[in-house]
Image 1 (cartoon, helix red, strand yellow):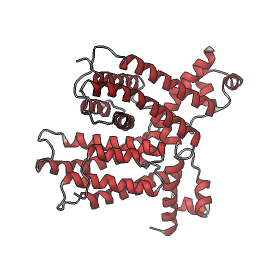
Image 2 (image 1 turned 180 degrees about the vertical axis):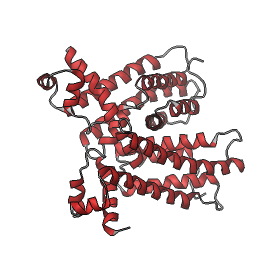
Image 3 (image 1 turned 90 degrees about the vertical axis):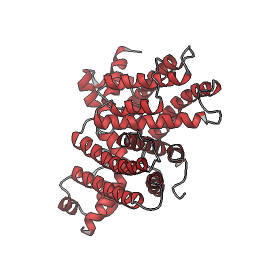
Length: 191
Length: 191
C-alpha cells in the first residue's frame, strides 16, 4: 500500500475510534497527517470510503490476532479463545481504553445507515464464526458440554465482550475487560 | 412538564436513538415536531442540554422499570432481575430493535466528550447498583453462591446486556437479547 494511504488509514482509524464518524471531518485528518486534500481524494472516494477501509483494516488486524491465538497447538481450545480476548485487551490498553471500533461505529451509525449496519454486523459475525470453530474443538475434546450450541455461545461471548469494551470506554479502564475474562474464562490462557 | 418540552424530549430521544448525537441537528427536531426554533431555545439551552435531558428521561424510565420489576414480592430475586431485562426487550421491540440509548450515545461520544462520558457511565452504574441489591437478596436466600461479588456480577450482567443490545441493533432482531436471557437466566421470570 502507498505510504500516504497507509498513513491516512492509520490516523483515520485512530481518529474514528476517538471521535466517531459524524464528528470527524476530512480536514481534521489532513491537519493531523499533513497530507494535502488532493492526495486524500486520490486514495479515497470520500470520508465514507476511508472509514469503510479503516474498518477493513481493523478487521484484518482482528483476524491476524485470531490466526495467532486460535491456531491449534498444545493449549486447550478455551485457553486459546481466552488468549484472543487477552490480546484485544492489550490493544485497547495501548489506545488508552477507547473500546472497540466495531462497537463504536456500530452503535453510532447502524440506527440510520444501512451501509455501516450491514458492514459492521458482517465483521462481528466473522469474528464470532472463528471463535465458534475453536469452541467446536473444545466440545470435541470434552471441554464444553456435548449439547452446547458453539455458534450461539461464540456470539454470546463476542456480544459480552463488546459490552465490556463499551464499559471500558466509559470508564477508561481495563476493569470490565478483566471481569469478562475472569467470568467466562476462569483459568489463565497460559495454563 | 410543559407539553412542548415533553414533545421535544420525546421526539428528540427517539431521533437520538436512531441517528446519534452528531448527525442530529436542532432543525431536524423542529421539522419533525413542528415546534418553532424560539420555543426549542426557550426550553433548552442547546442541543447538548436537550440530549442530556433526554438521557435523564431515558434513565428515569429505566429506574421506573427497575422499581416495578425488582420490588420484593413472592418471586425469586433472580427472576425479578430477568423480568427487568425482559421489559427492556419489550421496549426495544417497540422501537424496532435500535438497542439502548445509553450504549449508543456512550459509544458515539465518550471517546472525546467528558460531559457525556461521565454522564452515561453514571447512568449505567446506577442501573447496575439497583441490580446488585437484588442479587444480594438472591445470595442471602442461597440462590447465588455465598462468595459471589454481587456488584461485580451486576456490572457483568449490565455490560453483557449492552453488548446484546448493540448486536440487536446491528441485526434489528431480538435474537441476541433472547440469547442473553437464556444464558444468564435459564428459568423464565414467571416461574
